[in-house]
Image (cartoon, rainbow, N blue to C red; front, side, top):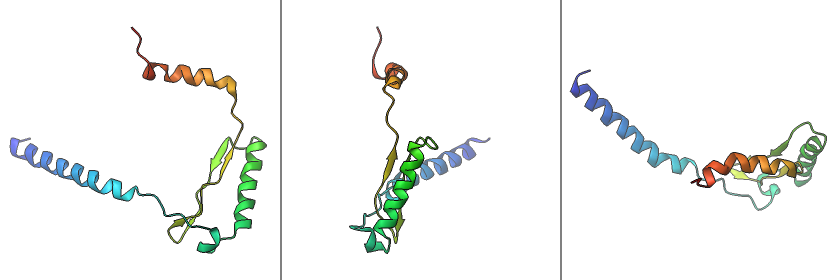
Length: 106
């Protein structure tokens, strides 16, 4: 490649990088939250049934956990979570995996 072509490509890539750096935070803004599910035409009772169904799947071992985002008309109705109990025997393993990045060995 000629030096002029390299300079044009470099300028184009830097311009694209600046545009992405400016636009990305605007796209990553959170959804506004509805005060109640009924404000966005959803039923609180049906959402409770949905959360209960996911919680039952977690307790039966079908899935390890779930976080559910339900949104309508550009507003979220919340983040119901279905969680499995944490197995404390796994904590040392997790600590071992992160040890190198969280401490300095001399």
